Image (tube, rainbow, N blue to C red):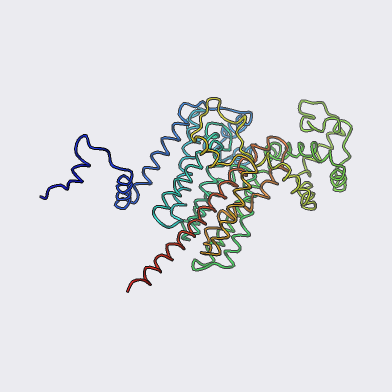
Length: 473
């Protein structure tokens, strides 16, 4: 056996100085080379500790909507009251699968969140090249998922936590099927879409918006063929139709359609003479004096507030025809619809936490990491959007774009109609109802930046390899 070198003796002897930073980096790289999954394991362990630290012992918080979700959860799974009741059934289904306790309900939401975000981080890591960059991408996605605007909902007994989590899982499924189309991948997208759509009614319309893009895939299928995309488009259409059918019952109409329309008609339509004329041209009775006097609380007439027969006729027309008439009005006045949505941009896009977090909730990310991971106001989001578009354009020109870019690009494109749908669909709690708009906008920007950087790095690696080959005699 040879004697250790003097340098080795100096590094290992007692009382010797610790290894230098360069030596530590080399050792870490050596471990990475020998065990490529080791860095991911370390990140997962750290992630679980951080997420658990922010969740542990935080008291669940209920809201008025919680009771209606619990009511749906109390019915048998195959009953109409469950599948087409006052609330969409995905969250009640989750609550039915755990012990009847608020603590266990929030534990289920927390567990689903952790699994879904790890799936998205893993899918993104597999979607880029270069081992070191894969580790960085995996870490960046997990950092985003620890933003307060994401984790704050895990301890709240409302649908936002499950909706956000399944969104992350759906994006992961799409990345998977676009990277390597397979029957299992198509099935994963459809199954995730199914549960995601029945988390919130607005998600069904988001799913519907993806069908034209799937049509482009059918038109130019590539080596995978057309059958998979055709099944995907047909399955998405069926899921959307099932979602519409689930809102057709009396309980669903009252809670999920009629009351929001009464809010919109009373607060917005009746304040706009042109809108009132349009609605009356479609058959709406002239608003009664009682309705005019109580337009800002129109949903309360006959339910706590006194009404009269003529006002009841007016309210009944809104319940039956208000939704379709509003849709016609918005389609025929697109500029006004988009202008109103843009004017409400701060309420829709700004980071939202006030009033919707547990009283003893804790954040994970310190400043300024938190502000960088999840930009808080519209102006910051707009800045990052412009920067992401510029970077993507450069990467496209220099290195080309992969089909995986469709995931964040479509995610961004559908947020414009998504924001309009949220804003015009109700007047109450717009910031909370727009939570998914806020999260998806920021997440799509992040994913686009990560994929664009991957293209530029791969172009650089290819150029270096070419230079080495040319310089080799």
